[in-house]
Length: 155
Image 1 (cartoon, rainbow, N blue to C red):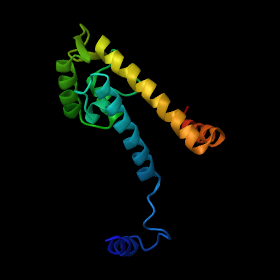
Image 2 (cartoon, rainbow, N blue to C red):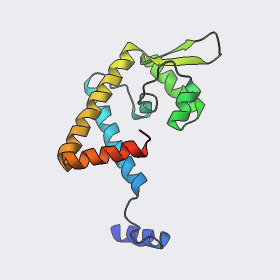
Image 3 (cartoon, rainbow, N blue to C red):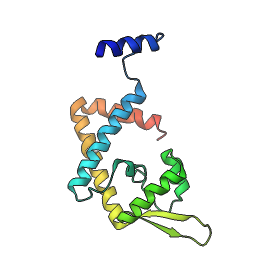
Image 4 (cartoon, rainbow, N blue to C red):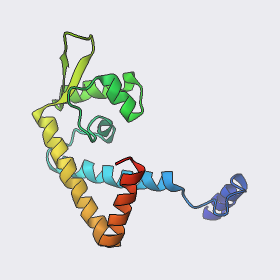
């Protein structure tokens, strides 16, 4: 099967000298998938097993605090309808609250205490992953890697 896949890739990406090598977007996605899986495991072991990976579109950094659903949707790269579906689930599970304001028909989204516990577990878990990656590739290489990510993401 690998040979067939390679020949298909080589034929489709004829100008690419290494068509079977994943590009940076795929490699970043692989890392994100590892992080999300670890977050899911950490949350499940801390009695937050009802959190699904899709909910990370809401429960990401920076955590929502008095934010409009449309702004959360734009930040997550999804439709307002899809975001509202996730918000409804998280609200029913007790992780977020939506509060009406007198200024706008839109309700502002914030984490509840339960949601802040999830955010804390996420942050602790990601710090653990960072330390593991640092041990795996060495402190200097990890610091360079992290500095490059910060530069590419504006800060």
